[in-house]
Image (cartoon, rainbow, N blue to C red):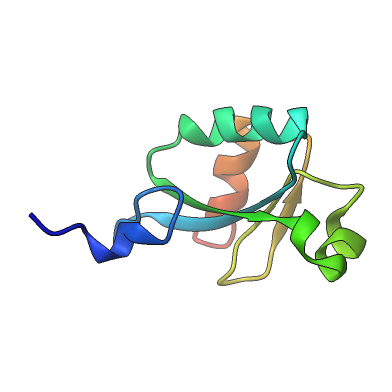
Length: 96
């Protein structure tokens, strides 16, 4: 049985009906772990994780704000602290 190519390069399974977000994080960040736990409760959201520690430009941009969520389609960001309700409202903003 062949692996699903859509899930090979991503930390979480990609589905065509999900909202895709990027989670900027770094190793050893306990707040980033809390953000992951929140996101795990939202099955309609697919998260790609990007470790900012590997990119000096990302460290400069997000270093004191992580964890940060980014909607790649709109460029909107959501800075920590955030709640499930805040994520829901933020991902649905402008869809009314």
